[in-house]
Length: 142
Image (cartoon, rainbow, N blue to C red; front, side, top):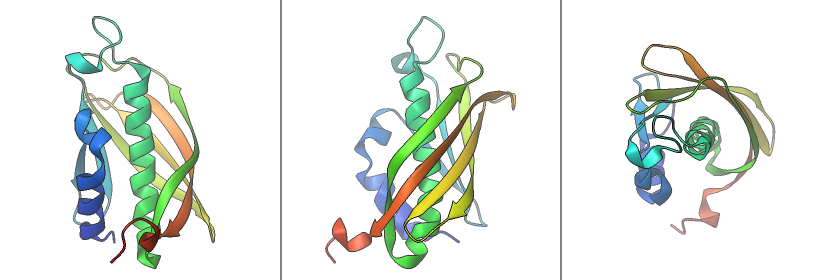
């Protein structure tokens, strides 16, 4: 189960996430689902979101899943690499949800995959990423 204090600290410090209106749902079982509603500021064409918005959602969704695992040992995570496959455009007004699953946890690296669906549950994108674990105290000196 994810420590909600860690998620709240992440939400508070993630200025970029605030800027593009990323939202998080924390479910009772500790699962975290990220979502974004595509607005005018997210568009690359008159109707479709810029790929960078989807990439930001992917990085965040994957990263919060890795954080859910690493925080149990007092660690935070940083992105080592990630890949995204765009399968369908995210359109103006769409709400895109990212649902992640941790596939592998090592001593230092965590591998995560995620699917991204719109409000019709249509698959819009898939992504995978590798995250490095490092001590919480490297960033926050408590």
